Length: 213
Image 1 (cartoon, one colour):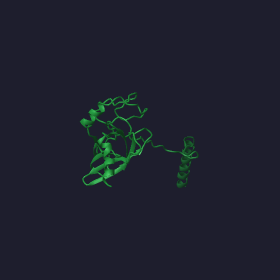
Image 2: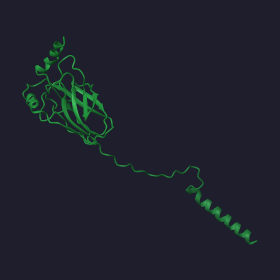
Image 3: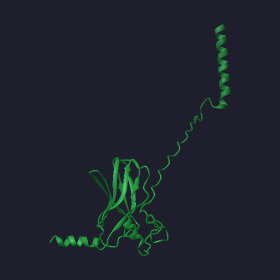
Image 4: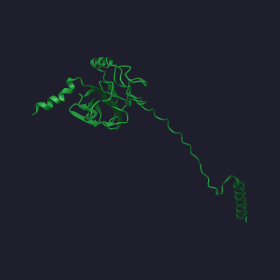
């Protein structure tokens, strides 16, 4: 009763079923306890979307010591494209792509604070990708890393990853200008200043004469 389902689950692996997770550019200088959205592509045989009915759970899994955290992937509009919102405490995290019934794929290491360092594509997978026949082009302007527009086969098989995005430059401090606001009916507006001064002089002269009497 137990052997049959085990054999059924093992059959795809024996038939050569495998996949790789290609990361979209990740932010540089990532900080702990900060929310980031990471995009990634789950490509069967490293070249095309999954061809099947029920792939299973997809996401990004982070492991540090005995702590393991899974962030589910949300399907995007493009075939095989996903996004996962993550937030992690400081530390060094091993990152794996959870690929449904395919074996997990080792993506690399995330250091917080720091960057996502991507692992090189294993040599056997690199050779398997290079040996494949040309594929159908499944994507438009938004494409997996290594798949230039107008091509259906990755142009490089050295690494299924993209270069991290540089951290956004801090904007220069805004200059502050202090402006004195004068009300429209202020008595000391320029056109009234001579009259006011003359009145003060007259009052001073009258006060002086009164004191001399």
